[in-house]
Length: 377
Image 1: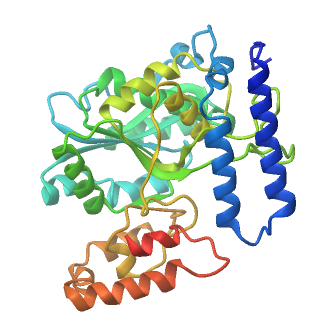
Image 2: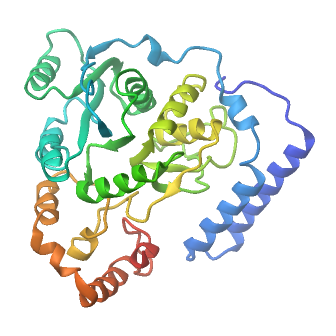
Image 3: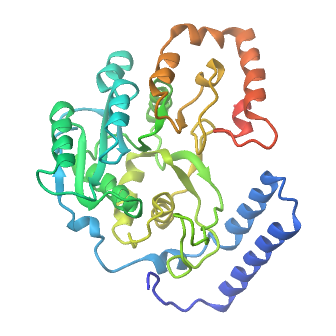
């Protein structure tokens, strides 16, 4: 059993029943062509009927040490942050075979020297991964990774198998490494290796937060009241034994999100007490944050799904865009082209971009990277 048996008081069952009733009403009696209303109703039912109860976390708590504690480092860089004032520590979740994606990131938004030269701040970008399914010392894949790391010095690898069902171990690795080797970084970011980050916009945003002394920051594309996938044919399938409740705590899309230093430390401590066998890593992050009382904050220009539209008016405010493999260089050239900034400058440029953004982001029956509300931010 993944979930420990605990007696739930009668009034809690009443609330669970009420939640299920509301959800059933939404699913069967509400016109599903109105997704915003559906999501709103699901969110209300979750926030008022489930979110206040501690038994969700209590049943996911384990007395066993998380397996990450027993994983050995195969590649590590303990002094990566030593002696430097680090604004942002970025962990990029990658797989052993994705060396082309890593190279593209090194040449664009993950280039530490470029960022320091143009923004005068230090970022540290590290690629976190497990071992190949066919791992052995001296194997072709491992030798290639070690040579890659000799050239760039930015891989962090542990000896768990790099598979979809071990994604939570990557999450634990990130927080463990940050806590031990870079606890002074002001912000910690987790990102996929097919993400594009508008680094100038992100740096400006984080510098503004740092100047205000912001704490309790967990920002990204927030999923409210998401439902566990119960279809056994899906790779995202979660059994009732593993997670018996109808809705997840709020969490940010795993594609990219940012935590302030204090939240990263709290989440690390919480992660040591929760059952890491739960393999939906972004939802697991929600469990950790809920345990320490941290709520996610939505940013309109953090993506959660598709790519951002190709347009200078979008680039002007974007933070992240998801789903980039072959066009990362193109995006980087676009956002570093000074001519692109001139399009949105001035009163007329602002009006023009407002109209363009509405046209791009507020189409009916389309699911863009950003919500329609981003066009008005």
